[in-house]
Image (cartoon, rainbow, N blue to C red; front, side, top):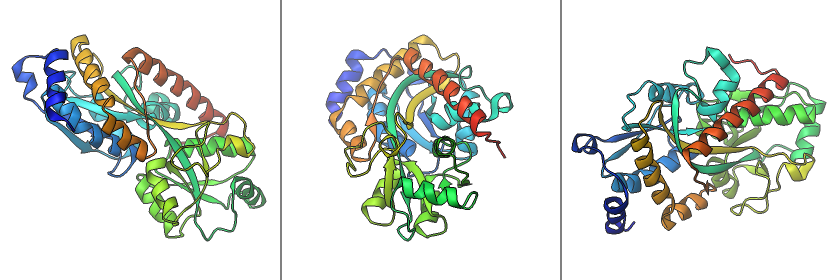
Length: 319
């Protein structure tokens, strides 16, 4: 990282608040345990954002409730730019789809979107001892044994859970979600042979595929991913047009002042443009992505609408 160059950009291009605010550290709250895609992205961005903003950025993991604990913490924080959420589909769209008005925060009204930062494909895999070799064989097996095939995900209402629920509806199969508290725990169960099927983000699953601990059978993006070109898409395997990615983005509490939003947005764009940051994300199977605050807000609204319909059709009930 070229510290001098980054600091030069910060001084020349970013408007600065009062000194009292400058010296306060920024909490980047991650809604999942260490090791998942959100955590990876937050830790990659913490240093360059800190240098650009002249503030220390501290990554804080607050897992639980499919990201809801972290999201509520940020939603209830002071709108001063010192508490941010490394949000994603779970806490910022899927929880709203699953719980509706019972949720302790509103995915749209309680946050100020700053920028998308990533689009993360999910990978579907099997324990190597499972006899089925591809998605169609797995579906045939699940049809023959309704309610007996379990799949592991990082939580009820998580992106993998709702994606596999939607796939199950399209395929006409009844399979069972076994929810863990984060992707690392779910993949540990599959590697150990406790559960045969896994879906999670590429950074979580692909290392296990490369090491032979998981047999990859599909990716959820519309095109194959460069990090694993041998893995076919779900769309290729009998479900044309199927696509589901776990996006990531940075948000603050509602009523974040426009100058603070502009300052944070400028820093995010500059950090995301750094070649080493982009390369590190791509090595993990994460596609770098940016947006305006308005584009991010529209994306969240569209995601809430999409997954609300999936929950309704699949008749998913929160515990």
